[in-house]
Structure formats: C-alpha cells, structure tokens
Length: 293
Image 1 (tube, rainbow, N blue to C red):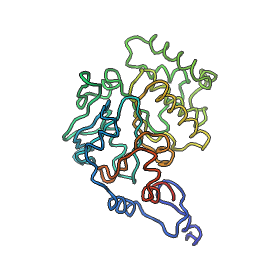
Image 2: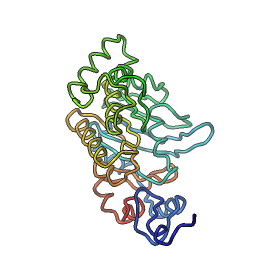
Image 3: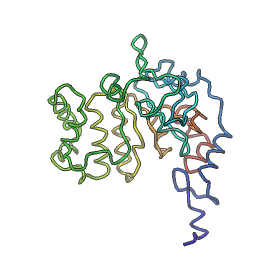
C-alpha cells in the first residue's frame, strides 16, 4: 500500500520519529555526518578521559573476516566514567564493543586496560580471559537470557568461569539482595519475565563475575519507556555507586547522551565528533541528525 503524504512527513529513518518534510536515508545521514566531522585529535580524546584512561584503544584497525570496519580508531575512558557511542547504522559502534571483548579480527593497534603501572595490553586475549582476568563484561542486546532456565539458574550461568559453583551461587544471593524484583522471581523461568525484568537479569548476570568494565549494547532496545528509565537508573547506580566503567552503544541517542559523561559520534568507522554528553546534546547538527530535532 502506498504511503500517504502525512505518513511520509512523520516517518523517520534515524533514531526517533521526526516531524520532517522528507525521509532521510541512512546513506544521507552518513553523508551529512561526514560533512560535519571534525578532526578529533588524540589530545581531545585524552582530555575527555581526564588524561587518566582506564580503557584505551590505540590506532585500532578491526573488522570481520577480511573486512575492516574500524580505521585507526582511538578511544579513552577513565575509571568510573561512562561513554556513549552514537551514529548512523553501519558506523562501527557495536564493532568497537566486539573488538574490546574479542569478537572481531584485529588488523592493527591495541586495546589497553588498567591504571598507571597496572595497565596491560589485552588485545589478544580471548573473551573468556577478558571476562575472568581483565574484568570486562559484555551485556548483549535483548534476548540473551536462557528462557527455559529460572532466574536463579541464569545468574549461576553468569559465573560459569568461576573456580567453584558455590562462588556463583553466593554472588547470585548478593544480587537478589540488591534487586528485590529478581528475588521475587528467582524460581520463575526467564521466558515469563517482562522486558524490563529480562534486561535487569541480563545486566545482573554480567555482574556475577564482578567486572570493572561494562560493555553495554543497546540497553533500551525493545523496551517500554518506563523500563528504559529503570535500566538507566540501574546503570547510573552501577557507575556512580559501584564504580563501574561503562562503554555503551545506544540507539536512543538522546537518552544515551543524557546518561553518559562523554559521547562519540561515529561515521564510517571513525570518530566524527567527541565531547561531553551534554555538549553533544546541545549541538544543533547532532540534534538534527540523531536526536529528532
């Protein structure tokens, strides 16, 4: 069925419904974002991390198979800081998370984690080593729970790398004491949980290994607004009360930048703009292309 004029005027191809007279394709968003790209020097990247990076990516070239997605990419995040990555589809946002956690082919550059003399090169570590020994956890997009397992069993699975099963069970009890919503449903199969409860379970399962760095991929995807607020409140608590360092990809760019200390706008595997989250929120070009206004 052909679209009416009113449908076309209110259709959006970016992150939100935008009241616009024309539809902007992903390709056009990318073109316009490239046009406003700045030459972001490494000194600016370092300054945004308070010149004390806890996680850093240096001149990274990475991708899948033989296809290179990230090109001489640099990133720095301080301990207990949050970074949100936004940009058009295909910009390489999730590839950054995948590269940090070991899901991509690394063609050049390195990934470092730690403070001062404790900084270590983790580029070549497996995902299991990054979780167990480097303190990095990946919180996947929606539908990563085991639906036929109970909430309790899902949490135990979060500790599959621990030396003893009792360690995972002990950590699960700590999580239940923190999140009563999960405790009330500990014997329920995960498939009966609401969308917000499933996301809470996904986050909580990642906490079982007591990571210092959380890689969070699209935390708001598929959630009702009330659950989106709940998820960001949980992430805020993990950052500001438990000292987690958070690197996030978020399709709800406005919500992500409101949450994060720092934001990067990615285009074609490179950083087009970098700045404090509130600064990007106030940038009219970022707003026009990614924030719905």
